[in-house]
Length: 311
Image 1 (cartoon, helix red, strand yellow):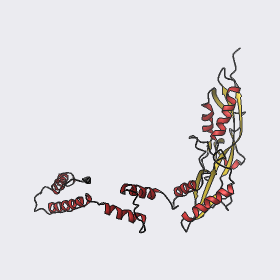
Image 2 (cartoon, helix red, strand yellow; image 1 turned 60 degrees about the vertical axis):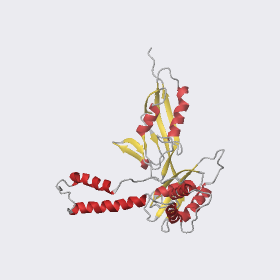
Image 3 (cartoon, one colour; image 1 turned 45 degrees about the vertical axis):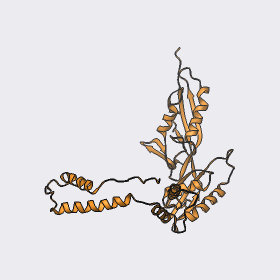
Image 4 (spheres, helix red, strand yellow; image 1 turned 30 degrees about the vertical axis):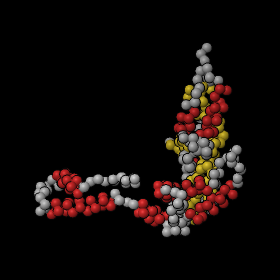
């Protein structure tokens, strides 16, 4: 006995007419003549008739119709496999449609770059820029160009060491057939900005410096790391400034720390280029990071002070 197809819509002509009539008071309260002689009622009955025909056809989509539609999606040379059921063919086609094979948006470029090599840990797409040849001190827009910044995984048990030059060539080769003809793709390594920390951590009573020193230094270095940094420990976000306030908050939450202050009235963050320092009323607020740049930990100078015990 064959399995009957489900009834996708069981409304009849009468149901459709009554549904339309019930909506008239809400959408047209001045319309009070519901007699068949009224032109509006005639249109309602006409549309109900046409809708019933569409419902009839909807409930009778055959396997042949579905295979024809699959052929439209897969191309004229596609043929169903005798080893696969219709549902399996549909599922396979839908999964193919979800897979991106053409880079148009920045998200497309980033997804395809990650698929180019398992050695890539992070990627950032910078539109309208040529990071290969531009002067880092004088960035300029380049219409029609895309720059891909890639961050490799560190070598480990499953990943063999690979040179940055080879990794860049792999990405370029993978993206070349997938880019638009009018798009020039540039692949580069990230530009790192080394940021140091200089603060004094005041310990709680009965807490020794040796108990918290290594933990505090490791926490600061991890927070500023390009692969493990940031608030979510997923790597410092590309182009995100480093704010003094978040370093204070980070260290103040450590177990055994009472509060945090500057060291000898010196600025809390250090960077080689003073032009990156953002100030408010003369006071250091943040270190400026460009969209194509990442932060890496510099010199972590943490001073620890114990509370003065009463005599």
